[in-house]
Length: 349
Ligand code: IDC
Image (cartoon, rainbow, N blue to C red; front, side, top):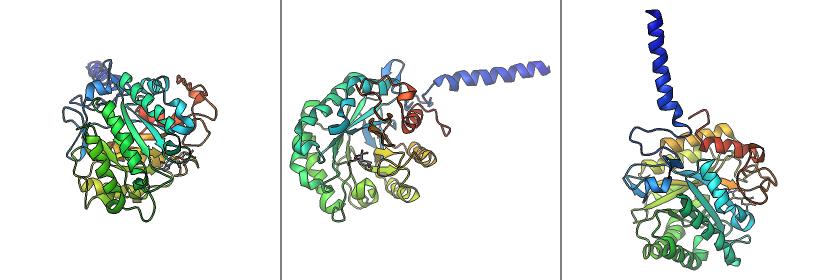
């Protein structure tokens, strides 16, 4: 009798292991919608989720089910754009379980405004993501010139071209301005009017792909949007954080926006201090990751580079030929940590 009970107990444990344990790096959800998998049953994420849309303040797939997308951001394309190729992005999909890639096109510091040729790295990224069945977050990386109005004409020209060429692909997500900043750069006076005009340009060619809009103070003050959000069904708002610099205060601002019904997308975060350096803050990062998952907030991590800064996922000088296929010994501490998060291998999963 005793043995029989033991056998029953063992069978239940074993069966549970088969059902839940073998899901591998994915999380099986009862309705089968959001598994956090880059590929499932041989199908890449875009094939499964299709046309994204914003419903009830959150990102949803074509079928209307909430989905959280996760992936990596490039570093500045003018410096480390060589990683924006199909080998690397494909490796990030297959080994890192990334569903999303973000080509970060700086405007200043050697970026697009004085160097239009770097646009090719955005195009390469888009083409690779279409081939790989991944989502691509096209980032107009406002940073040095904190007011997005400064280069509005160029933004309209750029996004019009992208929407015209690629707007029919569900892979595309537009990020209109990475991090507006400066004391005089406000939601009402600068960012909102900028976004209205760029959205109008995009919507001439692309009626429904999701558009993410930056927020004041380096995309930390998303609550400033609450009083006057944009009038477009598929718009979301940016929140950025660096776990070593931004804690409860920033999370509470994001909470306030969520409570008001604003759809939030973390288009960039780092596990270091806001300088992109200063160590890897694992505990603080995991608190944020939990918050993002609980609130179905999609994200991209900063960033793929080998320059030797702590937020870079490659060790100094690793993979100089930008081929992907990284061994663990090619990865920095941030790389090892973020890869684990993406593969759902951290403790708080
Ligand atoms: C940083 C890079 C760093 C580079 C610098 C140039 O990590 O190597 O020298 O840009 O401006 C952001 C920005 C992002 C920053 C990053 C880290 O969006 O461009 O990258 N950061 O400082 N916002 C908060 C932090």
